[in-house]
Image 1 (cartoon, rainbow, N blue to C red):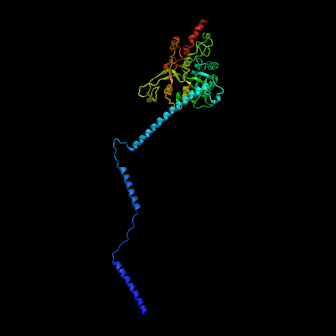
Image 2 (cartoon, rainbow, N blue to C red; image 1 turned 30 degrees about the vertical axis):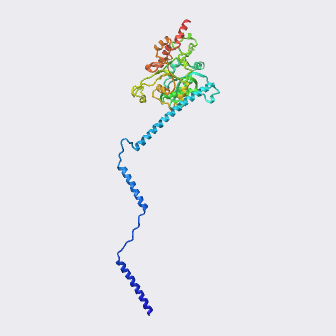
Image 3 (tube, rainbow, N blue to C red; image 1 turned 180 degrees about the vertical axis):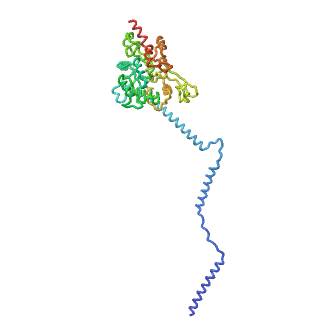
Amino acid sequence: MSRVHGALSATALQESEVSTGKAMAAARPHHRAPPGRVPTRCVAALCTACFLLGVCVVNRYWAVPEPPDCPSKANFGRSRAVLSQAQTREVVIALDRTISDIEMRLAAARAAQMRSQGASPSDSAADHGNMRPRLLFVMGIMTTFDNRRRRDSLRKTWVPQGERLRRLEKDKGIAMRFVIGRSANPGPDSEVERAMDAEDKEYNDILRLNHVEGQDGLPLKIQMFLSTALSTWDADFYVKVDDDVHVNIGMPTQNPLLLVNVSPVFSCTEVFSLNTGITRSILSRHRSKPRVYIGCMKSGPVIANNESKYYEPDHWKFGTAGNNYFRHATRQLYAITRDLATYVSANKHILHKYTNEDVSFGSWLIGLDVEHVDERSLCCGIPPDCEWKAQAGNPCGASFDWNCSGICNPAERMEEVHRRCWEHREAALPQAQES
C-alpha cells in the first residue's frame, strides 16, 4: 500500500510541475521566429537589372547634345560605308580599264604573232590549216528590212554583183556586204525572213547578224557587225557605211569605150582598171599603222532638249549646258583598223552606248592610243559639190546631203549622184571621145 501511495504522489508531483511550467510560459512575452534571409545573388541581379533599365530609359528620353564639330557615331559609320562603296566602284572601274587594255594588247600581240606565222588572227584552231587571204578592208553597209529599194539602187550603181563582187574580193582585197539582223519573230512562217533569204540567195551579198534588228539601237548593231566580220574575214580595215551614201570604192573598169554606149548611169557592175579608187587609196596610206580611226571628224553641240531629234539623255556627263561632244567621225562612213575592231568586239558588254551611234563609237576609242584621221574627202556634198572637187583633181570618197544626213530620197536619186560623182567619170570620158 505504501508503494502505491508513493507512486501516486510522484505522478501528482510531475503533473504539478508541468502545469506550473505552462503557466510560466504563458506569462512570458511571445517571440516569433526570425524570417529567412534573401540570397546575395538575387540582390546583385536585381541591382544590375535596375541599372540597365535606368540606362535604357536615359538613352531613350534624354538625348545628350553633341558638340557641333563632332560627328555622331551613326553619321560616321554611314560616311565610312559611302566612302567604302565609292572606293569599291573606283577599284572596279580601274580593273575594267586594266582588263580592257590587257585584252586589246593581247589581241594585238596574238594578231601580230599569227600574221608572222601566215595565219589569220580571227581564225579558229580548226581553220589554221585552211588560211584565208588577207583583205584590205571589209565594208558593211547598214540597212534595214524596209530598205529593199535602197539596196537595189546601190546594186545598180557602186555595189558590184555576182562574179564581179567575188573578183573584187579576190583581186582587190575588198569585201562588201549589206548588214542586217534578224526579225523579232524569226521562223519559217516569217514573211520578212523569207524575203531576206530569197534576196540573199539571188545576190549573195547580205551579212546576217545574230541580233534583233532595231533592238538597243545602232551602236549594238555596229558592235555585232565587227564581231561577225572579224570571225568571217581577215582584213586590215573594217568600214561602216549607211545605205543612203554614195561611195567610190575603187571599182576598176573593163573597157572605157562602153561608157558612151550605155545608159547615162555609169554602173560599176558594167565597166571593169582605170585607177585604184579614192576610198581604197585612203585606207592603203594607213595600212601599216596598228590603231587608226579614219573618217570625217566633227564635234557638235550636246543637245539637252528632249524634244529634239538628236536629244542626248546623258547630256549631263558632258559638263555645262552648251558644251560640245568630243571629236568623232560622222556616222555616214568611217573605218578602223583590225586592232581597234578587235578591242570593240571583245569589250562590247562594258562599252557605254549613247543615243547617237557616231558619238558612241567615238567614245569607245577616246581613251585609247588612237590616231584620228580627219579625211574630208569622205564627206563631200551631192552634185555639184562632188563634181567641182573632181574637176579640181580632188575626187570624193563619199558623197551625201548634209540636210538629210545622207542622200535625200536615195532610192530615186542614187543613180543621178553616181552618174555625176563617180570617180572614173572624168578619166573615162576623154578616152572614149578620143577613140
